Length: 80
Image (cartoon, rainbow, N blue to C red):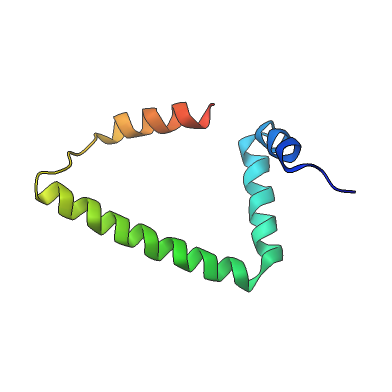
């Protein structure tokens, strides 16, 4: 039996965050080495992005956002 992707996406959004996190972790465990490779690529990409942002800040091209503001924005995005 196959569930259309959009229906699955909507159902996943309705799950409590902790249940969804457990499910995602389980799926990554099932994928195995591919997930490890993907995670490594993501970590490297975030490292490059963090460095780019830091350099932009030092050059005056970006400004810092206070942690409390960033967390408030994140919480608002997660509640959508």
